[in-house]
Image 1: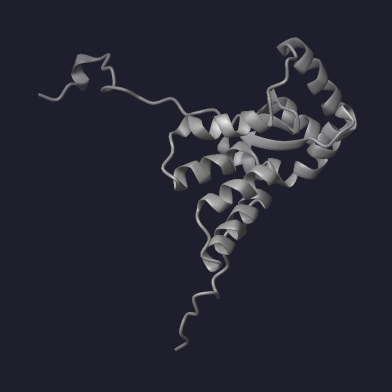
Image 2: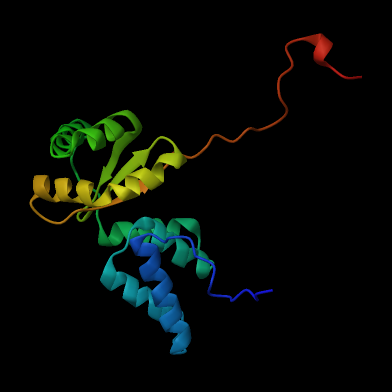
Length: 175
């Protein structure tokens, strides 16, 4: 009978930025640096909002702290939603047909910052597909804006159900 080695099981594939964040955590622990050291590294790297959120959670900061950090490095675009939509259509034209179809059907150009674009994907199961298309999308954004633009994907929050279900048929009541 073979013994399981701790490193033998494949770890789930981390996104590019999650891997960088994980490496920073390992380096901080290995060198016995203060956790604040990670903050200064993140400021230099300008990661997506999700990484700021992970760091804020690590430090037990208020959830809005991450938004503030991200937006201080990436001020929102002053462009109107109509102009953003026109730009989005230009970006879509730069993409291969299948990627265009995916994003037209399941994506929404949510926000534009100096070096970041946020694309909201309707369903969490499509995030992985979008991650595989990241290079294509960033290339199209960079082509349209004439400077590097990174993309971060989000999903809309799921609605929370408050209270008990409504019963429309009295026969369904159990007394």
